[in-house]
Image 1: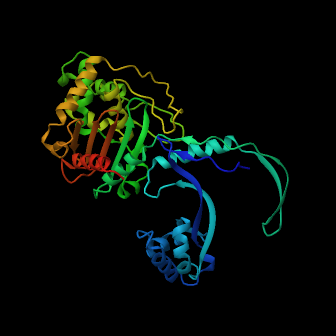
Image 2 (image 1 turned 30 degrees about the vertical axis):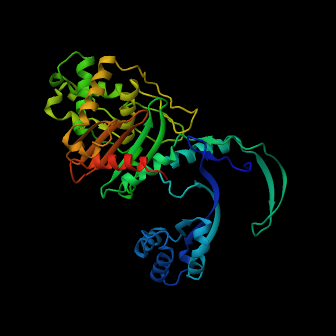
Image 3 (image 1 turned 90 degrees about the vertical axis):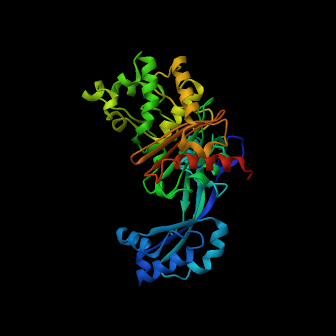
Length: 405
């Protein structure tokens, strides 16, 4: 048994971020359908005002793959359900159910980070669960509870998300037609303050946290760190040296972040490690996630890799040492970000004078990391249509951030 009321998830300033609400689950039961094409098309038309991307053929495909079991077409909040119910209820095969679910308090907030916070909330709820012996009628109606014990609910969960920044990140990622993701971290604390990806990216999963891509031209950051720490000229840095430098910035580090399924990247190993980075294979064999690159950006700003977290008071654990960066390496990286802001492809960011930025578009990967005060973020775009697209997305983020809600 679970205590009521359920804990809330609050944002970084204490405002409601996620609450348990009644959700109306709209299902299609193939056992109650006489004409599958007619029912799927009719339901798609009925829910189009709130779910325009769900069409009849997609529902038909789900039905065909369900092996005779009901499928969930859409989940609706009470306000939407009240409007759409008269259109949906008469459709043959439609089944309407009410279920409690943790969802965002503001429908404008959508993020792969919400999945992580749901996991933290579930752990909180399970940790304060009770037990009961209950008597039911044969039809499933509860008669009474015969015995049980239930303590108070757990405390509200203080999440690290900044909702205003999150909405700015959402506005930025939907400005492109390519898979785009943004991850933003507060360097001083390691707090994950925003994570957004557009629908093209979401078709591939939570790639903001788990997608890994070749670092491409971002290898220059790691080459310069390696040059300082290994006392070599940048052109003499090996693949293994670059990988070691990347790990100093958090890439390839195995973090255990409560609630979050993530990977920072994968570093090259084996016989190629001694090869000179100038041969070009290092940038292909050194892989990073947007999450990992955001941690690297935070490390540049802080001078040390922070322990990231999605809930305040629950920082990541890791078996890796997270030493402070050598001052010379920090200075070199900050100089590269300072100079990077003046690159021609970063012209879209010229109006934001305090932004330090470094970006590179190589092949199918567009990368950008930036710092601004106590904010660090990374942008990844898969198959960008131009070399300045990451800068334009970053500018859109900062423009939206400067606009009041």
